[in-house]
Image: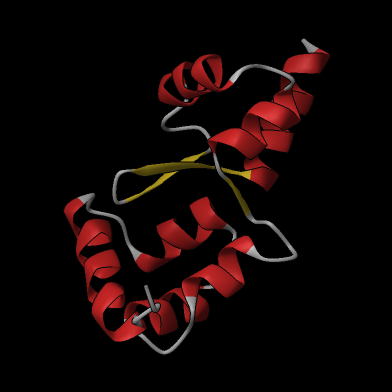
Length: 111
């Protein structure tokens, strides 16, 4: 299946609006610039290349589980519990914002 930003971008915009989030709020949650989000929503930027390539802003369940040293089932439960802390949903997929997760882990280790 070929990535079609012009088809997917409007869906991402609608999901953001359904959650009543501004571009700035989504920017804070994802670690992407507002400009990048606007380009993604307009279909002009490939979401996979920017969000999931080398810099790994978002971690999928398997990557998050490996990072935390827990199983995938436990990781899904963990991500559901922390929906508003560092979790991003894109459609029915769930991701952890790596930077926010690292901040959360650091905070928990200092308690």
